[in-house]
Image 1 (cartoon, rainbow, N blue to C red):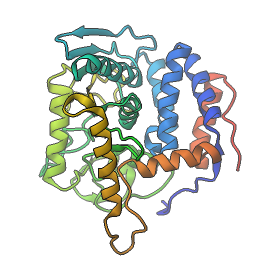
Image 2 (cartoon, one colour):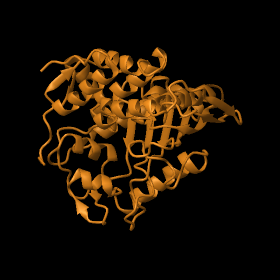
Image 3 (cartoon, rainbow, N blue to C red):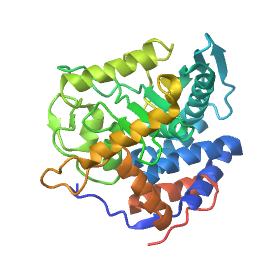
Length: 358
């Protein structure tokens, strides 16, 4: 097993990646409109460098559609509970569709009431949480986005998975400066990163995971048989537990190990839960005051003297935004192993293979 990263030396234009994704999904009874939303979310992740949540996930989604583990044409049901709270039943559809709908409904409630909260159940993996933050930020709103996932991380001190690498995501818009886009996993490394390392024949750093016997391992295969470790010891464990409460316990979705693994469980649906909150910037101050203060915050952050080894201070999400702008021009880089998997997917679904350049 190699210990260096596979070379990302093949480049795919974002438009070509979207066309390929839509063609594969429509071949599997997903409507063109829904396929376009899923494709946008996957490619947005790859553009921002979160390739654990991009096209590398497409094969397992297709496999779950074929095994009837996911509904290609969900009829989501929104239950409006109060003027600012609603629950959304995803009808076992793509998590991306549930996520976009959930955040859109939260924004709609926040327009008139200052805040909107939507909880979702009966969903699936929804990809990169930042997608829904950006959806809110582009509309001019604060956002909080939480989700749970299949058990892969133990509570601190344990060696058996109980919680997922449940994302914590928060965003705030700005005016002329860059927005705040924080999307983090409570684990040292997301499980998707370990899975991608296994696909590419790479090792993982020590301290990422334990094997099934509770020993540290750098072998991604053994790590996937064991558990990932929480960041900051008990703090990351507590944060993951909180995400499970907000995304699972209060939503009616699976929780405490009750979310099923999309890679290993071909009998039960996932029943992932999500939490979406949108907050209107002008609710406590005028919008003009808020945006002026937000821009001021960003300027203060960037004006701090630099520590050794740093060229500049970046806002959360700024590195990813810069990378996305670059990749829109140059193309999204993929490893040979990534493209081989996608070529096999094209053959199996009788669509044109993904176009790329070297």
